[in-house]
Length: 83
Image (cartoon, rainbow, N blue to C red; front, side, top):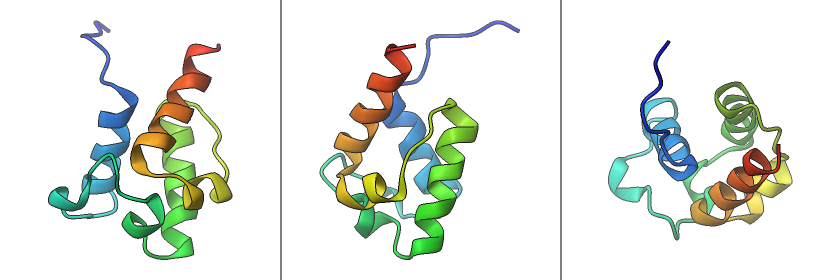
């Protein structure tokens, strides 16, 4: 398998929001609180699972609720880099 330039974590999470969770793409901004994008607790749990399956990083539901999209992506990216 050939890999092209890796997508940024922000791009991957944004794509998940739009494609898997059907969040309108115009609402997916770096400054948007994740709790506004994922409108119920089931979506938050599903996003935590999706991030783990897609990027291999475990995230907590509280972390998702407390962060903006940019903060959350930076936190996940930091853990990927620390490996």
